[in-house]
Length: 357
Image: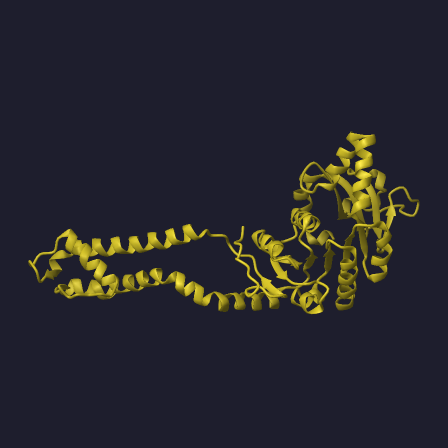
């Protein structure tokens, strides 16, 4: 999990890149620093008390446990009144080799919060610069509302690394939620090319667009396509009548949310069992799932009917052909198939090596 960075307008203007961070609560962070400081103090007290014969107390000549604690606190805080001092060679050597490094550690722990605040911006700038240089072949998800979150959840369930997903949203709260999920987030209006450029959209392989409004989706699609002619663009729209506009704007795939939900509602009314099966198929990572995979070597030359998994369609030369079409014939190595399978078999699919592609 990553930490949520508090957002203000001054901290995250439009186009700001926000990287996911490990989440550590403020109370725990302070507790860790306090524990380290007490451990250092206890170590110095033990060292001084065990070697108390090498120290002299100008008040009574001997060093008790309380004197060792007193000496340790004034030494670590660099106060140093001089009333207790090391006099033997061993005690002075220990002061140089052990107590002085512990004093430095103690001071670093005490001012750690201040140093962290002072170095946060430069460290974040370095992290962002490193991310910009390394990001490539990633997926840009525009809009992290209900649909966007579900899309990202499905991507992650299908073995897409979190580092390969970049979220763009105009709402800081949504980007904060993406950061909590360990994703890189960018606050800004996705209809602007400078915001999409910060997401390195020109190097993305896929763009998932799921804003709240269809007119916004059109503008984002046009901008995305103009900046990356080769990316696969998937767009969600509310109304079916806008699907054609999306395709003319450059979308490769258009999902109509209102019609899809309406059909599921109608199926649930006619057949609750059928709607349950469809919902199971749409849920990734559990039960049954619909998946696209390559044809395995042992499956070459077979028909879709002869495979162990039910085949819904065959993707050949970039075109999707229904399983029952005579054009399918026998499967070849270059084909990809869309199957229904148990979600647990995702692990089995991972065992197939790249040489079998």
